[in-house]
Length: 151
Ligand SMILES: [Zn+2]
Image 1 (tube, rainbow, N blue to C red):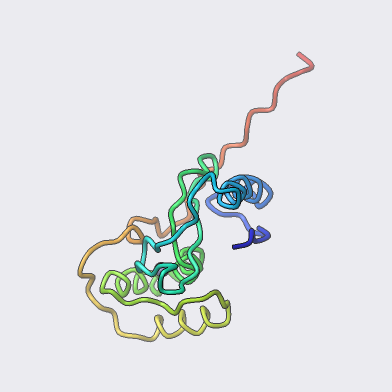
Image 2: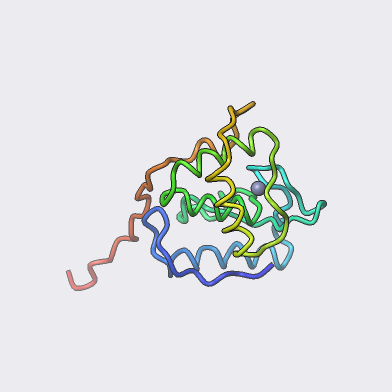
Protein backbone atom coordinates (compact mmCIF):
# COMPACT_ATOMS: atom_id res chain seq x y z
CA UNK A 1 0.00 0.00 0.00
CA UNK A 2 1.44 3.35 -0.96
CA UNK A 3 0.28 6.88 -0.43
CA UNK A 4 -0.71 8.43 -3.76
CA UNK A 5 0.20 11.98 -4.72
CA UNK A 6 -2.94 14.11 -4.53
CA UNK A 7 -3.35 16.61 -7.37
CA UNK A 8 -7.08 17.42 -7.38
CA UNK A 9 -9.69 19.08 -5.23
CA UNK A 10 -12.39 16.85 -3.72
CA UNK A 11 -15.52 18.12 -1.97
CA UNK A 12 -13.82 21.50 -1.84
CA UNK A 13 -10.70 20.21 -0.08
CA UNK A 14 -7.43 21.43 -1.62
CA UNK A 15 -4.91 18.78 -2.79
CA UNK A 16 -2.23 19.74 -0.22
CA UNK A 17 -4.70 19.44 2.66
CA UNK A 18 -6.01 16.10 1.33
CA UNK A 19 -2.46 14.82 1.09
CA UNK A 20 -1.55 15.95 4.63
CA UNK A 21 -4.66 14.43 6.22
CA UNK A 22 -4.41 11.25 4.13
CA UNK A 23 -0.75 10.79 5.01
CA UNK A 24 -1.52 10.87 8.74
CA UNK A 25 -3.90 7.93 8.28
CA UNK A 26 -1.51 6.10 5.93
CA UNK A 27 1.21 6.28 8.62
CA UNK A 28 -1.19 4.73 11.15
CA UNK A 29 -1.83 1.82 8.75
CA UNK A 30 1.87 1.44 8.22
CA UNK A 31 2.89 1.38 11.89
CA UNK A 32 -0.01 -0.84 12.95
CA UNK A 33 -2.02 1.77 14.89
CA UNK A 34 -4.96 1.06 12.60
CA UNK A 35 -5.84 -2.19 10.81
CA UNK A 36 -5.25 -1.95 7.06
CA UNK A 37 -8.44 -1.69 4.97
CA UNK A 38 -9.61 -5.18 4.05
CA UNK A 39 -13.13 -5.12 2.55
CA UNK A 40 -14.87 -2.85 0.03
CA UNK A 41 -17.95 -1.04 1.34
CA UNK A 42 -19.31 -1.02 -2.22
CA UNK A 43 -18.79 -4.38 -3.93
CA UNK A 44 -17.69 -6.39 -0.84
CA UNK A 45 -14.47 -7.50 -2.54
CA UNK A 46 -11.71 -8.17 -0.02
CA UNK A 47 -7.98 -8.54 0.38
CA UNK A 48 -8.68 -12.26 1.02
CA UNK A 49 -9.67 -12.50 -2.68
CA UNK A 50 -6.65 -10.48 -3.78
CA UNK A 51 -8.46 -7.15 -4.19
CA UNK A 52 -6.68 -3.88 -3.47
CA UNK A 53 -8.58 -2.17 -0.63
CA UNK A 54 -7.90 1.45 0.32
CA UNK A 55 -9.28 4.21 2.56
CA UNK A 56 -11.61 6.89 1.15
CA UNK A 57 -12.53 10.18 2.82
CA UNK A 58 -15.52 12.37 2.08
CA UNK A 59 -14.51 14.94 4.69
CA UNK A 60 -10.78 15.51 5.24
CA UNK A 61 -11.41 17.44 8.47
CA UNK A 62 -12.18 14.03 10.00
CA UNK A 63 -9.57 11.78 8.33
CA UNK A 64 -10.23 8.85 10.68
CA UNK A 65 -13.80 8.75 9.40
CA UNK A 66 -12.72 6.91 6.24
CA UNK A 67 -14.48 4.04 4.53
CA UNK A 68 -12.75 0.92 3.20
CA UNK A 69 -13.15 0.64 -0.54
CA UNK A 70 -11.57 -1.30 -3.40
CA UNK A 71 -9.45 0.45 -6.01
CA UNK A 72 -12.14 0.23 -8.73
CA UNK A 73 -15.07 1.41 -6.59
CA UNK A 74 -12.77 4.17 -5.29
CA UNK A 75 -12.02 5.36 -8.82
CA UNK A 76 -15.75 5.22 -9.60
CA UNK A 77 -16.51 7.39 -6.53
CA UNK A 78 -14.09 10.01 -7.87
CA UNK A 79 -15.50 9.77 -11.44
CA UNK A 80 -19.12 10.15 -10.41
CA UNK A 81 -19.47 13.92 -10.91
CA UNK A 82 -18.19 13.61 -14.51
CA UNK A 83 -20.63 10.86 -15.43
CA UNK A 84 -23.50 10.49 -12.90
CA UNK A 85 -25.48 7.97 -15.01
CA UNK A 86 -22.58 5.52 -15.21
CA UNK A 87 -22.03 6.08 -11.51
CA UNK A 88 -25.66 5.12 -10.68
CA UNK A 89 -25.26 1.95 -12.75
CA UNK A 90 -22.07 1.16 -10.85
CA UNK A 91 -23.98 1.50 -7.54
CA UNK A 92 -26.83 -0.69 -8.79
CA UNK A 93 -24.53 -3.37 -10.24
CA UNK A 94 -22.54 -3.69 -7.02
CA UNK A 95 -25.83 -3.86 -5.05
CA UNK A 96 -26.65 -6.88 -7.24
CA UNK A 97 -23.40 -8.62 -6.23
CA UNK A 98 -21.39 -7.64 -9.30
CA UNK A 99 -17.72 -7.08 -8.48
CA UNK A 100 -15.22 -5.13 -10.55
CA UNK A 101 -11.83 -6.78 -11.25
CA UNK A 102 -9.27 -7.03 -8.48
CA UNK A 103 -5.96 -5.26 -8.60
CA UNK A 104 -5.05 -1.66 -9.22
CA UNK A 105 -4.66 -0.73 -12.86
CA UNK A 106 -6.06 2.56 -14.16
CA UNK A 107 -6.33 1.28 -17.74
CA UNK A 108 -8.39 -1.67 -16.52
CA UNK A 109 -10.61 0.71 -14.54
CA UNK A 110 -11.26 2.82 -17.65
CA UNK A 111 -12.29 -0.29 -19.64
CA UNK A 112 -14.60 -1.41 -16.83
CA UNK A 113 -16.13 2.11 -16.58
CA UNK A 114 -16.95 2.06 -20.30
CA UNK A 115 -18.46 -1.42 -19.96
CA UNK A 116 -20.66 -0.22 -17.08
CA UNK A 117 -21.74 2.81 -19.18
CA UNK A 118 -22.90 0.58 -22.02
CA UNK A 119 -24.44 -2.24 -20.00
CA UNK A 120 -28.14 -2.46 -19.20
CA UNK A 121 -29.26 -0.95 -15.92
CA UNK A 122 -30.29 -3.39 -13.23
CA UNK A 123 -32.61 -2.68 -10.33
CA UNK A 124 -30.75 -2.70 -7.02
CA UNK A 125 -31.44 -5.66 -4.75
CA UNK A 126 -30.31 -3.58 -1.82
CA UNK A 127 -28.85 -0.16 -1.23
CA UNK A 128 -25.17 0.18 -0.42
CA UNK A 129 -23.08 2.97 1.03
CA UNK A 130 -22.29 4.01 -2.53
CA UNK A 131 -25.96 4.95 -3.02
CA UNK A 132 -25.70 7.46 -0.16
CA UNK A 133 -23.09 9.61 -1.91
CA UNK A 134 -24.29 12.88 -3.47
CA UNK A 135 -24.36 13.26 -7.27
CA UNK A 136 -23.33 16.89 -7.00
CA UNK A 137 -20.02 17.69 -5.36
CA UNK A 138 -20.53 19.38 -1.98
CA UNK A 139 -18.06 21.92 -0.62
CA UNK A 140 -17.21 20.63 2.84
CA UNK A 141 -13.95 22.53 3.21
CA UNK A 142 -13.69 25.41 5.62
CA UNK A 143 -10.15 26.65 5.97
CA UNK A 144 -8.76 26.92 9.49
CA UNK A 145 -9.19 30.50 10.73
CA UNK A 146 -6.18 32.77 10.28
CA UNK A 147 -5.25 34.26 13.64
CA UNK A 148 -5.12 38.02 13.73
CA UNK A 149 -1.68 38.35 15.28
CA UNK A 150 -1.38 42.03 14.39
CA UNK A 151 -4.52 43.08 16.30
ZN1 LIG B 1 -15.46 -2.33 -4.62
